[in-house]
Amino acid sequence: MVTAVDVLVHLRRSRDLIDARYAEPLDLATMAAEAGFSRYHFAREFKSAYGEPPGAYLSRRRVERAKDLLANANLTVTEICQVVGFSSLGSFSSRFTELVGCPPSEYRRRVVERGGPPAIPGCIAMLWARNPGEGTRPDEGLA
Image 1 (cartoon, rainbow, N blue to C red):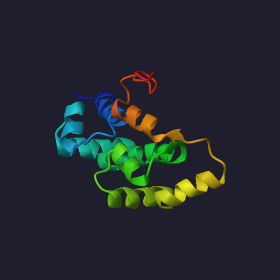
Image 2 (image 1 turned 45 degrees about the horizontal axis):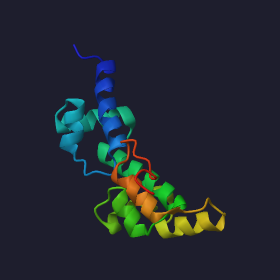
Image 3 (image 1 turned 135 degrees about the horizontal axis):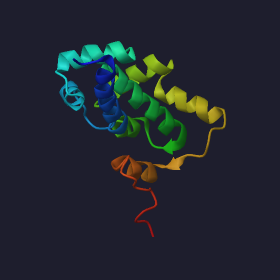
Image 4 (image 1 turned 90 degrees about the horizontal axis):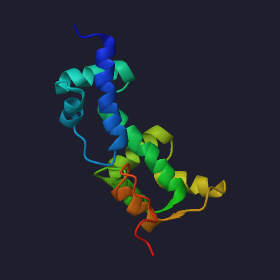
């Protein structure tokens, strides 16, 4: 018999996958396979456990990372859109506005007006984005 704890353990594996690989193209089949469930069973269980469908969780994680980059990196909104894994600028801007309450460019403007931290050079942010989670430091390989 599968207990609720067993289900949560499997769902957590999938959520950890999303958290670690949010910038990669992750589809429902990949997320469900990580949990060991069929796609439809996974989608129902994930929403029941975490309060939102897996796709919504994934896009929210991407927007959270985009907020960090908008505040701290010297990258364009389009570059950030690509770095965090959105396939189109329109879907990125729409989801960002839905979750944050303003478009990405407006969010950046507000952070700058408040005197946010100095921007990380875009080349360093892009280097890190190629290998997130692999422990690659942005200064490795630089002379």
